Length: 140
Image 1 (cartoon, rainbow, N blue to C red):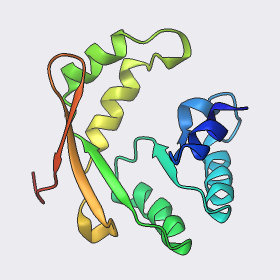
Image 2: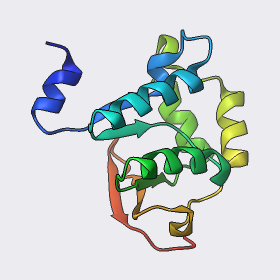
Image 3: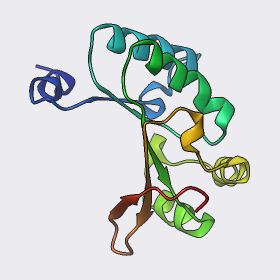
């Protein structure tokens, strides 16, 4: 049995990440197809991706809304140095070129409930390799 099937049987959402689609010629399109399939099957999904702008989030939020799901977002308050440190721990295909990290952080616009989220949460690094999730405060 695949890990995804075990997760679904245990009531856990199915993870869907662009990292898993790196060998695909059109990973964003493939992710959209997979997301549509999972939502049509009635499966809960965790979309593990960076959507740094409202425009990039809009299509995903709209698709999820089409299937009458709640939209819950987690905003990782990452600083450049923290991002580079975490990335340095990655190996092989998981390693991200520094220029890509800098480019994404330069485009980053914090999300807003007005974009269509039912819930938003802040996430930050706790200093010991873990993360802390806190309630959303607009504008922070």
